[in-house]
Length: 344
Length: 200
Figure (spheres, rainbow over the protein chains, first blue to last red):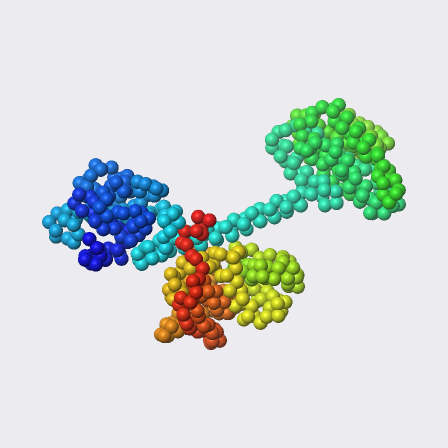
């Protein structure tokens, strides 16, 4: 039956372009223009509706009688072929006595895409004219697209802020001259070691004869010495150790997991040897050395960073007092050393 | 001012005149940064200074510059989002013109802190329309010439032939006269509903 011969179908096409009118045997006698588009030219008229589209919920007998029993309910359906797109629907069972327009004992099924509308619009090449004028699909597609664009802009901003935060943190923890860590980073690492109750060794390193380089050859030479020293320290430490420059020519090193006095002594000896290799500046040799004081957390019943810093510093004084270019590992007996009496 | 506005100016300068022109202009403004973030807010003053500096650098008046920016936003292949979002407004150019009344609210749904000026279309009959561009709430920047640029590019997009005239400002409102000479002059650019957003 055509729209021309039966104006009621024209109304349906306008109000709900994705509908099908079924006769009493469940065969399609009319379908709205959008439904035709969904079936991409495949003939619908005369086909049994339930062979084209499957009723998934509610579960009823797969017959026209079962379908008519769903009058007014929210229906979940699916295309039987092709992309098997999901649909929502509602069915009006037409009275058998011809009291309503349409085939007696038949049904009108109106369909929509529900949540699969974004894919459906693309898959079936639908446009604004395929939806009723009062339908909100176009507004929804607009919103999805506008929100996605806004979200993408926000996501990019977040990425840039994240990058900036990491760079700022990195900068806040770095000594800009040498690229070593700074005192803030050192405090942070000490806190972390305390919280995780990990053993470690703490080392104070002071350069010897650095002041002479600075005074006789200038600050530029001094800066280069510091940068060379930093590089040498880094080659003598592992990635998870910390090397920080905490003052002009003062460094603190933290060796996570180190509990052996011998091992700590070896590291100190090697470090001093490396520092004594001359640095060349404008063709001139700068010669320095270093004094080291160190302590081990395993030597304390309850390691305390402040106390360990003080003890390691005291050991450094002892090393300086013993003629520099040597290392001392803290021992409580140090406090009895004659030259240190004034310091303690 | 919403960063999207400043960002649009930035993209226009970079995509049309190149990075060097942009960096040089920003360097002269001395704001302490060279890029605008689309999703951050800036002082309205910054936008005014920026427009003045770009106008000077490109030897354009601010109205000329604003109109160029409007056209750029719609027609440049790298910024497809505004064009697509506006195309949702209607199936043809007349339909689109009538959708402009809703544009500030539509925009508000997507980016809640972007305040666009109120737009009001009047159908003068015989294919003539007047579009009143009101003032924005947060700033006193007049955006009427941007709208002219956008309308020009959208007419192209729909394939319509139009005559546009900015009739000046009156009591804070700008009036644009639109004369539709030929609704389907050329074939226009394609628009498929389902290719942007999630599908992209």
